[in-house]
Length: 126
Image 1 (cartoon, rainbow, N blue to C red):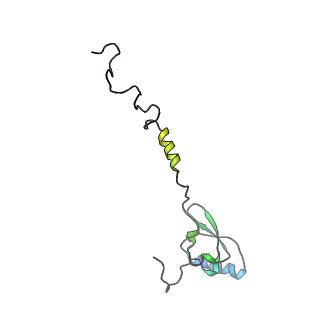
Image 2: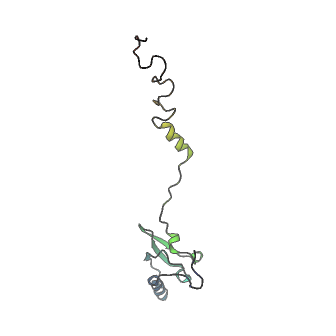
Image 3: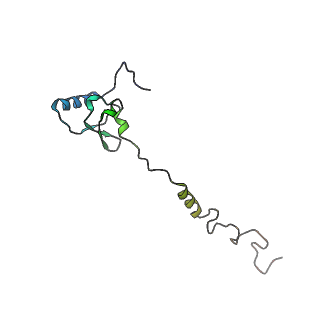
């Protein structure tokens, strides 16, 4: 659920003070912040904020298109490595020991069936 328009955007006070001080001094240095919940305002445009993602600080350059979004949206906490393809899955299953069709799987012609004479010595069938 979004925040009420009547209340206005949420920005941590310490972050807002740093941005305003940098705007007064016309300074453009990187500011480290843990405040992923803060909303990006027009005063932040042109600054670079290093937003913490739980492991490291991700530098985020603020543009006009980002105004109204949260800082955490631009600092992902998870890294997507991709899905495996069907070809890799089929190759993995076919090469697994004990899988149907794999060498030594005990399928037809493997020598260990339950036909006549199974388990009895060759010359002593009764």
